[in-house]
Image 1: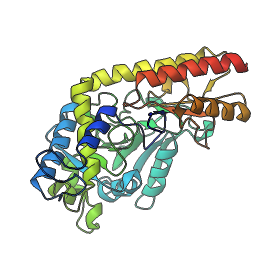
Image 2: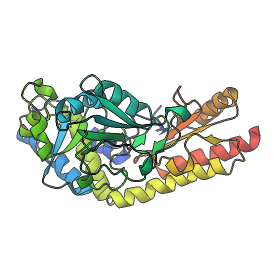
Image 3: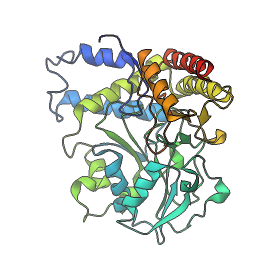
Image 4: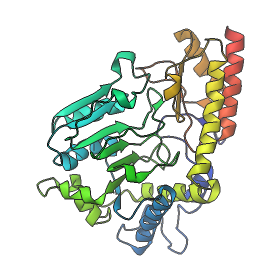
Length: 364
């Protein structure tokens, strides 16, 4: 099949077509290099220019200040779950504070408990993570080493509209599934990280944005790869980085800057896409039931259920026949999950909206 489908996968996810086209065009040989990005040394000037450009693009898009390091790491969120308490957990006299609003926050807290005393500030498990806490719900430890939260939970489809206040305690954020989808005030964070395979590139690279003064917490007894200070000192070149993933991330950030026009424009487009689907849910007369409470709905992952498992399977199959794929929800929530990351075209969401309206009308 040569025709591209509308891929609503939660990740690895859809990439911008101009990025895919450029990567395809230059895959055999980068212009002026005579070799593929897959073949060149990470110590070469060519790759050094690529990784520097990727960092420059990120700093431009997010207005990242000079007193923050930008790291390109491997191992995904699962590794960073451990790196954070190992590196930052020595900085407080109290606990490691975790706000748990979904599956990924829960997994992160489980890993952190291996390295320190985890204090669960708030946990939405009782309602299957369908809502977010108010600031007044958060019982923070002012002596904590850091406060950790997930800005957008892909499985449950809940997203913070703004970051929780952590006072003088460094705020740590897993922004994997809404990274580069909206403006972020980086200065409010001690550390913000994101796996690339939602909005920033292919699987294989994780971006860590870290306030430089916190690097002092990375002690020498840590294994080398797990030490943030080493990666910062070596500009993410201490080991062989995921060169192809960094290259594609550079292309994606260039696309955001030049084709889209920046993060504010991307947010406008993302709001437009999400509105199409949430309007269909709310206008269905209860045929579609959204998982997330309205004030915590995600712009990235729209989750909803149908009246029965049989109708859910029929919906998934019917959507697939129309070129709308990867819509089945996670087993812990069920139903449907439409992931509408940056690169999902408005046309794809419009087509899904049309199918949702038609399906509800013919199956009620």
